[in-house]
Length: 166
Image (cartoon, rainbow, N blue to C red; front, side, top):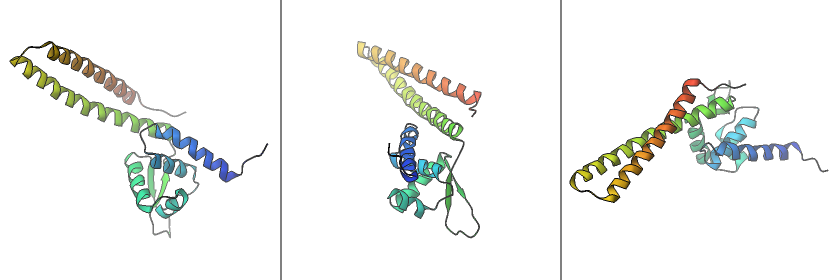
């Protein structure tokens, strides 16, 4: 059996882990970057990340900003280093779940608002005309709104209960 070297093992871990975190809505570059930072022992500069992942510094900057907005990476200070350094947040489960829950809550709120607007339009139109199609659309809109309410309630309950790591 041929045992891979440390770099091959690290690359495989990065690949597999980036697939997992990609399921949380990160772009492929963001997922790879987060996995790389998580596996790194030291905070890294944008230049370090760009070189390691073979992407432009601009791409790394954009991805770091997205990861930072999700509280998945932190900018750190190191004496004698003039460039910004970044490291991954090590509380994986809590960080990802909080980010995911907040994203779902935000999405359901926006969708519910849009659906309520559509329901209002349907009701206004029903005042002027009656049709089977409008009745069906009204019922379906109600069902879709109920779905969003259930999803929102589930994620609110998860948020209120708190996310704990072992």
